[in-house]
Image (tube, rainbow, N blue to C red; front, side, top):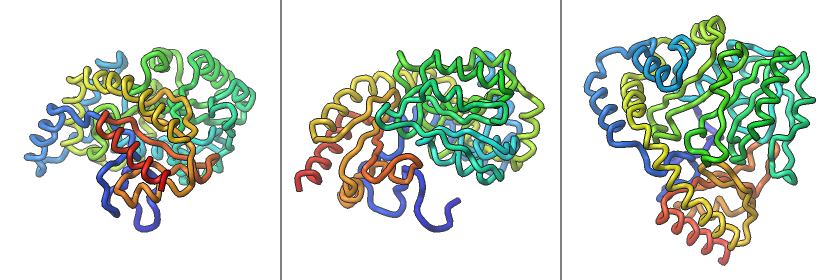
Length: 350
């Protein structure tokens, strides 16, 4: 919870009038009806405690992913699991490529770790480079990585991802891989280490229902790891009943709608190239991306002036490794994307 001060994340529609929110990278189709119905039905039983083990949900996830139920942990959103993971591991030395999601650094510091930053260069398109391999040493207890990365939207190449996995195994380093945008990633760029887990006991994969099934308000994430002793230690740090009944019911319903993320990917594959061209036509420098959002650079005052018109985009100036004038926008529907471009045109030509 944020008591006061600025919200370090997107989606803050509570302190200003917002008619278009492009700051949160959620499925542009929203949540499927089955998910909304399941959450509504579960809300009629609010007097009943939720299952503290998320048993039915973990079983359904295990069947979908082809892993054992005991290798899955559920949390109150992916962010809770990030903090729990760092608190359970308590690394002395962690390697963090930046720019990246701010909760990684926050979770490490909360666990008493001063992270070592590995800078991704703007002139290289913020891609994760092969030189990261040399930065991983036997003293590196943890490498935190996201594919695709937030906010740049760049995936780690499949070859490099497996080289990093091999290097981490050689050095005894834990690899924490955030795949929360995996289901909404461009099909030709999407890659996962899920199939590699069977032989790895120091890999933790993070995913969430938040983005792919449009469930940000319910908070539901999960992690996959074959190291059950570590998962027991992680779960011991969690409060009981951390995943609500409506969230568990919605997750079960979402797994019965496997086509929903595919529907969103189809929409995104059509709209993202058009949105990128329109942004570039406005004179903005747009980074090629693999996710359901676009990273670009423009005037430092752009975000604030759009907010005055009720249009919210993600100002990335507070990301480590970025600066004022760096922004991220979600890819949404044709109508919404056109409204965004029109608002930008008004601001930039004013």
